Image (tube, rainbow, N blue to C red; front, side, top):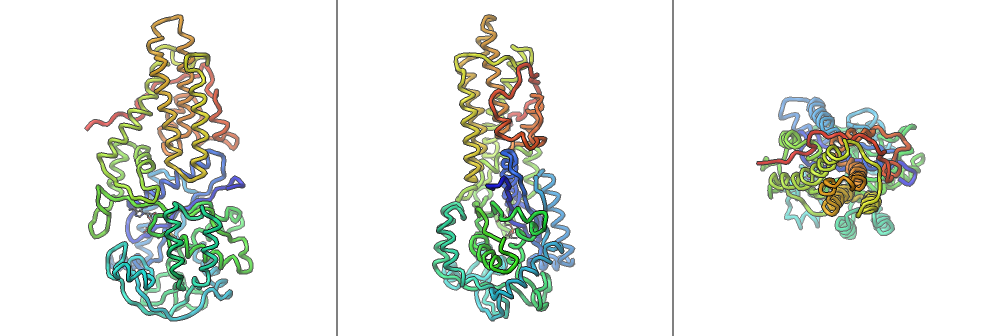
Length: 523
Ligand code: ME8
């Protein structure tokens, strides 16, 4: 990021089923971060995609009488379509069945075999079939031999496999985490990871054998396929391991859910370190941040396949139709489990937040300012000038921009959104204090009215820039009313710094009234 490049990833999602709120949530957060970084002028690369070689994919295909590839194609198509309809701004979409990925994975595995970090051996342990992972013995006992995710019994399994020498990386990982306190966030997650590493690391399987040949053939031993988790993690690397993209490495942010923290905060850094020691891969260095968010629950209940209560695309689309896509994004980002805790997705809360923030604050403030500009100023921005609250909004806008960039640096996306919305609240406060609607009755005070409304419109212009990453559609509609180019059309020189400079709104600019951007929702 220091070099103005910003590479951010979502997990790649399993294609045993269609997308649900969890997938939309993580991808929305990454979309917001990607847009925010583009806004501050970074060259952004936003990667998402699908993880296809899991046995739950081939099992689900079998149940439907399809080949694993056919079923993967169906669901990868659903993910792609959904992500297009949600207007995510991803720069690439990787499917792990694509040759650009499978060929690279074979090269990485071959290099790790040569270095000795992969070896053939026998393994017996407690296996969580749904999650496709072995659970260390001590942890399996703590979990009462049940999967923490699905609740199903862990099974005792024995196999001859290739293994990754994770145990050799215990000290390395503890040092890495110690020297880079921001590598794994939030802190609660970081502490959890450190605690578990201290309990001791076992080597982990890197290949599988069995009835199904669904997977990437293991180099030199086609009886084996590459273990799906190693295959999947490598997507972050394979996609940018080309002459044109290699300079994007390392990823600045891997955003994930707390369910897959271990793979990203322990196995992945160890694999990176192992590969980085291999000739030709010295450039493969550690990521900037591995950020694990919490989970959504549904109306107070944990979501699970067995309960059949996942908030699915049909429900999310329903919210987007009733309230707009931006409103759904706003709810996900401002009310979602961005930190270590879980959040409840509840319809009543959605409506409450929509009305409070979007209808009564942002939408209403834009209405007030554009209506008053129409009524008192003939519909265009007046000259700036002095009034009793002069300087208040200019200062507030400067502070909001600073808070936005500072929040972005900490990956505090709700803070970025809050910076924009608090500036809108400041505009409301100035209107309440200065009362332009009352001053307008006295013709002698017309310049003051013009000056107040200039400040209000200018602050709203800047607030809408700060809100753009979360509310791209409606803020662009507002910008168009101000006759300004939308942020998506910004050139390289039009970054937040230049565009948010106070005074960007030229006097005389027509400020069109328009339909309510966020109509109040009545039950
Ligand atoms: O784990 N709340 O894929 P996956 C919030 N393929 N986010 C949720 C969620 C919830 N209730 N449920 C799921 C995999 N997620 C692997 C990843 S990466 C190299 C391989 C989100 O389809 C969250 O981001 O099970 C979680 O990490 C991800 O979906 C898991 O998606």
